[in-house]
Amino acid sequence: MLEVKNICRSFDSFVALDQISLKIEAGEFFTLLGPSGCGKTTLLRMIAGFDQPDSGEILLDGKNILKLAPEKRPIHTIFQNYALFPHMTVEQNIAFPLRMAGCAPQEIKTRVTKALEDVRLPDKGQSYPAQLSGGQKQRVAIARALVNHPRLLLLDEPLSALDAKLREQMQLELINLQKEIGITFVYVTHDQGEALALSHRVAVMNNGAVVQVEEPSRLYGFPNSRFVANFIGQCNLLAGEVLSIQKDRVTVELDGLGQIQTLLPHGVEIQPGQACTLTLRPEKTRISATLTPETDEVHFKGVVHDMLYLGDVTVYKVELENGKVVDTLLANSAPGRARFFEVDDPVEIAWRFDAGHLVLS
Ligand SMILES: Nc1ncnc2c1ncn2[C@@H]1O[C@H](COP(=O)(O)OP(=O)(O)OP(=O)(O)O)[C@@H](O)[C@H]1O
Ligand SMILES: [Mg+2]
Image 1 (cartoon, rainbow, N blue to C red):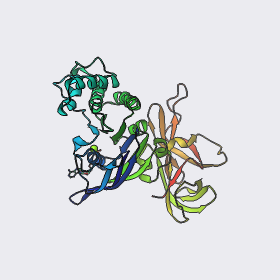
Image 2: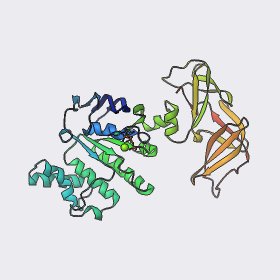
Image 3: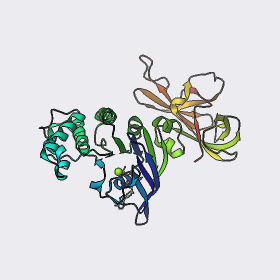
Image 4: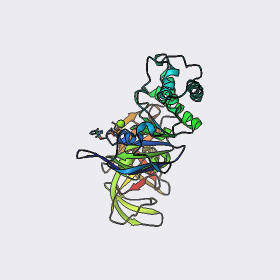
């Protein structure tokens, strides 16, 4: 439905967007995720029409929209603070874009009522924004966006000002609302947890470029680079070199860890001699005082170097005999147990040959 083709944008000599291409499907919850300054807002502004690219095209339903003024695009943007008018009631806020467009009063009334029902706030029309909870304000902002029947809703970090508990609540609200309304969402965040929780697909951006586009579980499980592995969740990055390739496996020499076997990643051209990194999630490792490695497991001895108690889980930083430190993770699920090991405890760790994911860059 929305196609971004080779978009470039520079500010003086600084390249903010470098050949961005994306295809977004109708009805999709699509997220742009990346560190601060990577160009997310800049891209959103081009889609909305608040800024023009130096080169490239943006197509909506196959038509180039770059020549259209923002208000002529069937697109609505919701910003971080929702930008509700404090001196207007909820109804007046929602009616505002329709009044600007010169709609007839009866038409405005019908559409506002419908929008309030869509966001499940039928009784709040006479309230002022200050009388609403954060979640209700978000829904009013979405209702105001919906009255014009946009094809596309752009949301730029709408939850970033909220505390963790409320955020989670609002995330669930957003997922359900998007499902019910069926409008395509392009959502911007620098919070990887939020991106994974909300999205059908995520585009990871870095330094003005899109580096990977995937469904959340594939992004987490099969990052295509050290950057993505490290940016999404916790990850061990074990550098090394490709030695040889067998049927579905690669033998690699990892710095300080010696030769191990790992799963051959799909869709990557791998040659012996190439530098590589094994990305290994802490929860994919086993840690125990002593353990007997199973077939297809690699196995190391070490001592607990440090630990991070996070409540539900504890991250143990295990220093192996060769000095390498590997993060492992244990759920604190046994009754009455807060921690299984102390600093300096000898431990053993193991992981299956297919626990990690090999990347070349
Ligand atoms: N009008 C402008 N003039 C000059 N530089 C700009 C302008 N707009 C953006 N930039 C620069 O382009 C880069 C990308 O900015 P952008 O606002 O798109 O980042 P972002 O990914 O949205 O970051 P954040 O997560 O902090 O909101 C930044 O380095 C920023 O300083
Ligand atoms: Mg931004």
